[in-house]
Image (cartoon, rainbow, N blue to C red; front, side, top):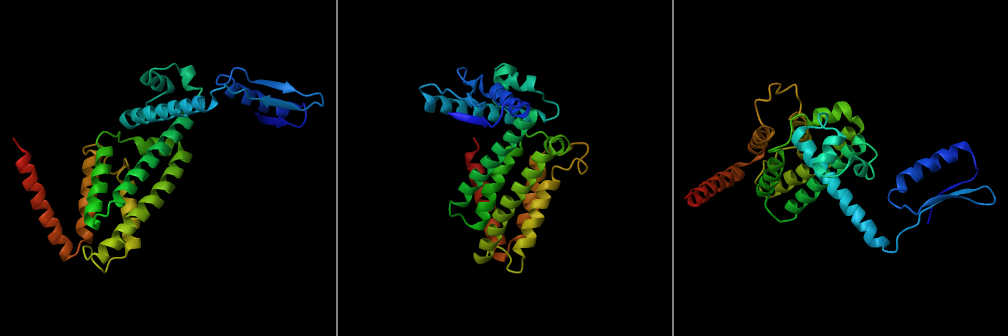
Length: 268
């Protein structure tokens, strides 16, 4: 397979070719740059016979690397972790790690994208269960709270200061997804009579997104007195109690009683 073709035997295409060859040669050792009789140059990738299985294994390993790196970033933050720490936690050499990512910046970007995709899929699954609006919000709250239990509080600060491009993409993605999720939940809750009919779904959804972002602002809780999960639970309670109708309030009280009774029965 011809991956790259340069029109002339000149310095610029040669430099590009060398870069490409350096990146693919560890993965496909038989690949070699070739020069044709007319002066054109090619980079020819020689795939192994079991190409499909090989590529699948590569993709599977790359995903495990990203997932493992994400776990380290979530636990220790981003700035305090270097590629030596990542390779050590993954049980591989740094040389092997660099066969999958160019540098730490790329690894951070892919880890953030992986986390965003995981959140999107999980929340979409919750929203597809046919729950009423209040139960849907509690399902989302439980999932997000679980993520925040052990997350390092400096995550967003590190992203904003040291990986601004990744931060911009994440904020854009989260704003769009979370906004639409909350907006749709508000609209359904109003139709079900569980939320107040006088609410502006658009304004409330925007406010919810901003509260979520502010939760990671190091200027609000400088001494790290509160865990992120506890802050989020307070934001959730503030949100849900501000939007429910009288019918929703009754449902919430009945739900609280049912939950308390279940917990009491579960105690030894």
